[in-house]
Length: 149
Image (cartoon, rainbow, N blue to C red; front, side, top):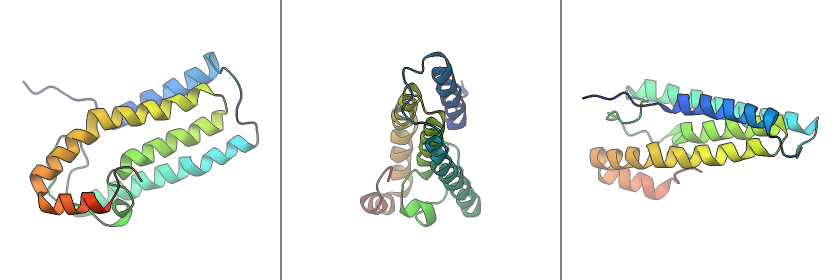
């Protein structure tokens, strides 16, 4: 039986909803005052840009962007020189930017939980699959580039 898996964009959407809900219903305290919260637009924009660049790189390489599907190319250039998982990094940056823009304390917990979930649900499995598929090339790349940053 082929069960349908929940993909990272769904986790991102749930994280955004959770952050907004925490901000409005359990803000605890304001930690970033206006206008400083507007600086959150910077990591938010960088996160979006990193995701677009990484997605385009997958497309150009002709390999899948979907977790748990076998990759046909090992991408090691562009944003993949900075992070082995730039799309997850981009999502976390986006969430951190949103937390700054919201300005209350509780939304800042969500990016940390999100990162741990991505690690446990996706990254570990993806890295095992990449090692099985690309062997020594993957291991060399893994030595040179950190998982997150």
